[in-house]
Structure formats: C-alpha cells, structure tokens
Image (cartoon, rainbow, N blue to C red; front, side):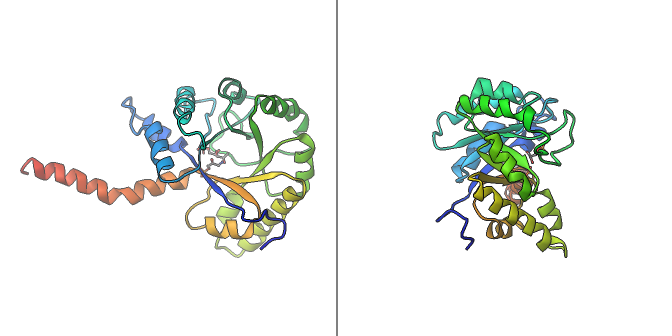
Length: 255
Ligand SMILES: CC(=O)[C@@H](O)[C@H](O)COP(=O)(O)O
Ligand SMILES: NCC(=O)COP(=O)(O)O
C-alpha cells in the first residue's frame, strides 16, 4: 500500500451520460432518456453523474443539465460533476446550477473528444479568477491534467481543489510493453498531487478491463468518471434480454 494514500481510501464512480444523449439526439423521441439512465445508474449504486455539455450541444444540451440538476435534488448524497472549458460555456452552468464539482477541461469548441490537460504554468492566469469564482459559489474545482508530476505544485498554487488525471495514455498503452512505464507516470503524478494536498479524480477511456489495475497502482484516487465504455457495456450486456422481449412481442401476436 502506498504510504501517501489516505487510509481506507474509497473511490466513487461518476457515470458520464454524454453518450446516452448522443443516441437520443438522432431522433426527436426523447429516447433513450438521459434522466432515466442517470436514475438507473444511481439505483445500481453509482455515486455521481458527470456531463460534458459541449458548446455545439452534440450530446448533452443545456436543458439536460437543468433537468439533471433538478432531478439530483432528490439524491442529496450524489455528486453532480459538470465538465467543460471555463473560457467557453462552462461558467454559465456553474453560475446557474452550482454543481458539487466542476472539471475545467482545455478543449477547443469543436473538439472531437478531450485529448490533453491544462499546461501549467502557461494557462495559470486565465484560470485563476475562474477557479476562485467557482469556489466562491460553493463549487469544488478540478483541473483536467496530463500525468506530469512537475505540474502539481502549479495546480496547488492556483488553488484548485483536485486534479482529474487524463487517462487516455494509460488506457491505450494498457497491456502493451509501454504500459508499465506509462502507468508509473500516473503513480508519480498522484504522489505529487497528494504531497501538495490535492484531491485526485481520473477519467477518459477507463473501462472494465483496465480500471482495477489503474486503481491498484495509482494512490489516492477519489473518483473515476466513466462514460463511453460504460454506456457501450450497458448496451452489450443488455442485448440478450432486449431481443428476448421483442421476440415475446412477436410471439404474443401469434406469429
Ligand atoms: C474530460 C473527458 O475526458 C471526458 O469528459 C470527455 O471529454 C468526454 O467527452 P465526449 O463524451 O464528448 O467524448
Ligand atoms: N472525465 C472523463 C469522463 O467523464 C468520461 O470519459 P470517457 O469514459 O467517456 O472516456
């Protein structure tokens, strides 16, 4: 056990429901429902819901954020985490909704998906006042960061509460000869974050195969946010029951 890890550390699962909205947006029928997805995830034991309302509203729309915020009022112990770029549309949600946590991500407006963390100290001055504003509204601030231990003192100096480790490089190297070296950079970054008194989240391309190895190796991770793989698994784990239900409907017609 890593001596820097908090005793009896537990890790929360925050389900990112972006991809439910992506599928929903291909028709005007309201299905699959983002709210029902969130409810089912919470009823199954997830401890948080994450959304990344991009400026182009390709998946999560502002109305989804409002509806989730209203829905989560009935779930007082559940964390609502909103991700995005605070120099674009994110602060509108922070000011209006005041979620439990906001994750600042340095994405371009039309970015395909998140692919890098903040560069510190270069990005520090455009983040400093936004971090303070969110915190004064009672919102915890997490910064999306690459696995770079030397950046951690800069995060602490900015006054952010947590980092979110951008885990794509871990996921894509998992099970390859490069895997152990890449994972070691995440361990070292988490150790540096803990030394600075920062909280630690992690996310991007985490999945059922790589998650346990990540959490065993990286100390102090308080929360993982998982969307793409989890929603894909939910589909694949549900095909058999669903096809049986449709076959029953056909049989009930006597066909
Ligand atoms: C910050 C992060 O890693 C994820 O939220 C990712 O940005 C998901 O966004 P998409 O679902 O649009 O790929
Ligand atoms: N912050 C990461 C997240 O919310 C989900 O990322 P992914 O599992 O969709 O790659």
